[in-house]
Image (tube, one colour):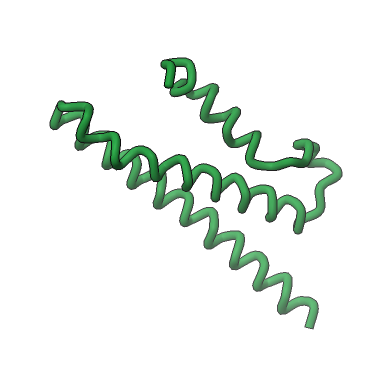
Length: 97
């Protein structure tokens, strides 16, 4: 993997590629937006799983610690997004009753 593939721009591109639909939020329904966000979260989570096994190869205890802490924080934030979407879906489902 080249350094270009590890850039913030690559990460943003990865998020954008998580959905097959164009990112036109003005015409997107709530359900479509929820699905797109869920797919992006799944893609990010799958990529995050590649971090932990690579950390020991860094061979620097301070950097390893910081990478693991940051990866954990990202995971917590992804879980927060997923929980918020579930809450929104439950609220929508109960409104339909």
